[in-house]
Image 1 (cartoon, helix red, strand yellow):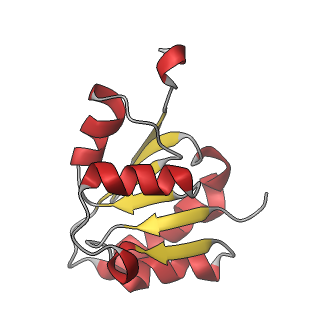
Image 2 (spheres, rainbow, N blue to C red; image 1 turned 30 degrees about the vertical axis):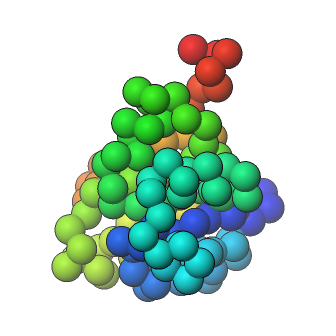
Image 3 (spheres, rainbow, N blue to C red; image 1 turned 90 degrees about the vertical axis):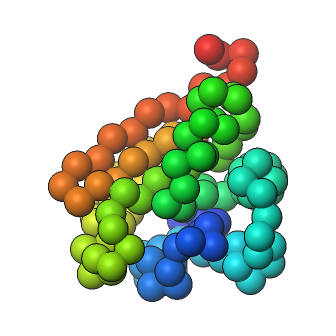
Amino acid sequence: MAGLRFLFDENMSREIGSVASEEGHDAAWLVDSRRGAKDDDVLAEALQENRIVVTEDMDFGRLVFAERMGSAGVVLIRIAPWKQDLRRERFCWLLREHSDRLSGSFTVLGEKTWRVRAILSEGGN
């Protein structure tokens, strides 16, 4: 599989983003280009650039499922920010084992669990 393209929300550390780069994926950081951007603008930009948003912000779930905004994919990390080693380890595992399932999906990554749900287009719901 060709490398994926990710957009790391400003709440994500560069250390997490570096995991994507190390695994051969393209990583961009919102903090470099659009600090303070609204979530719906972030999602729209990521879709336009075919990037999967990586975030801690649960509002992206509302945008994708309740408001039915288009998305190339979202990875919601639900591991405490002070557990950087675990966050890095779990994100690396996700990329190595399940990168083929991330595009077009809303993925929630926890300390011991993970779940993935397809993001359906407006016509597909």
